[in-house]
Image (cartoon, rainbow, N blue to C red; front, side):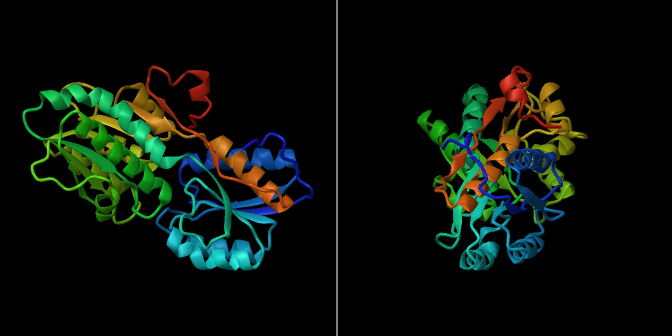
Length: 337
């Protein structure tokens, strides 16, 4: 969908409800949205809860956004189920909703007119493909079973869950094609929703850890638990929060790295901590989204919806980066501090 020719027919006001402000990722989305709003001559109010565990706070913010009667609303839902009543209310009031980051699957029909987001499942698959390339020989040489940890900050957000499932399913597909058995254990949501059938005495165990609350301390503890399992050869974190928790959890243990006797670390997004960890080899690599472009796309779609124009989903894309290519211009533009 071509967003380059979008123009606002009026000086619209938009309400945008994000998942939070606690990660630089959301600041990058905000930057892109503000720049595009300024270019189009529209205004916006960009809000988000203090923590990505604060689902009730986000629902309240969404209700407040609806009460403000904007031309349209942007929403990155923490929990799709929790937002459904408010989404129906917005639809009844004639306020179009544009989803971003994680879409709003299961929303009342017609309430969400489009989404600007990374194809999260495909992004998880890309992470798995790059990871398996490195792990393949280690798996072949291992006499016993090996464990691949997956750290998800939650089991409710579309983006987090699909990045986890994309990774799990692709690792299993590649491993099974090489003749290995795979099983998934840990968090029930990921175990049940993955395409992997449970197997006893599997060669590869995919171990999914989700904290009871989204805190840096709990996720760092999850990382340490995985690092302390003797058969762990890799940990994958599906967003900036989990990636930073991996770095923190590794500080005292010093087990992450690319050596034969180390645990390979791969993650999502960037920020100062993750960029430095990739650069110094603590983490092998990461998937970057395009948060600035995502923010701009949200404003473009909101403007088109307010204009009464037809809109469609926009895949804002992703790329794999390591220490070898992170300074390339097409990658570096998406790596925020």
